[in-house]
Amino acid sequence: MINFNKAFELWQDWSSDNLKGNTAQPMRSRYQRHLRRSVGRLLLDTMDESQARKVIRNLKRKGLDKPTIKQCINTLNSIYNCMRELGHWQGKSPLFGMRVAGSKRRRIRTLSKDQCHNVLSAFKAASRPLYWTLAVLCYHCGMRPSEVLSLRPMDIAGDTITVPDVKTPTGQQKTRKVFILTPEAAAAVDYLLALPVEAHNRFYPLTVDTRYVNTILSSLGHNEGVAVRDRVNRISLYTLRHSFATHMLDEGADIRQVQGALGHDNLNSTMVYLHASNKAGREGQEILAAGLAKSDKPELRAINGGNHANI
Image (cartoon, rainbow, N blue to C red; front, side, top):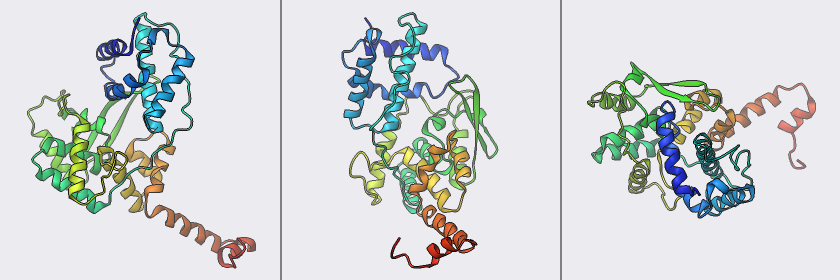
């Protein structure tokens, strides 16, 4: 009989031995807390489809958003893959292919340019330079926290950062180029390169907890006048990454350019930033209005410049 705690320990040991090239896999351990409470006393080696649906319902009752629930399910599927490799499970995971319906996706939280500058300046003044570099690279380079934590000296060449290889579900190796274009990002990289770290080792120790860094950011944001009232409105490293994408759109960048800068495989993941941008909606309407004004169709010109009372 294998409960969740035992299965998670097996998965961690198996991941460290067999998935050394996958930097995203160890980050899934942060979903352990959600899964432990949702799985409860259910045994993973005897779980059926009805019990798997109960786990998903428990995750929804915790108030988690849809992406987080999906990540929890992916983590549990990975645990079942480990159990299958070790001979404790036969076949696919009972959660494989299950859809998460009815979960509300939170609107992303972004900060203005002045707010980002003030928070990062306060972070630098707080005498936490290593954590400050983590926050700076998330905002000025748009990197994911997991990508920053995986950085090594050998990944930096001039003004280019090569994010360590991440193995995709199909087994392919992918790399991502990030560019150092601001003085703040250059200062953060210079600080990291000055650390006594060998070329193949990471700058950041494994003990760095992003939740602790998020707590510091929320506290500094509150001191700078940023509203931090509850869990939804807190400031995190991903808030800085979201702000990076939104500010790119505000400056006139194309959605495809933002997709490449963020490293999104799916354009739908990038489209969410159009709702957060203050400029994208108006520019889209202006482009449409300009196109309608030049149209040869009289019914379209009437809609654009005629009486809108009956529309």
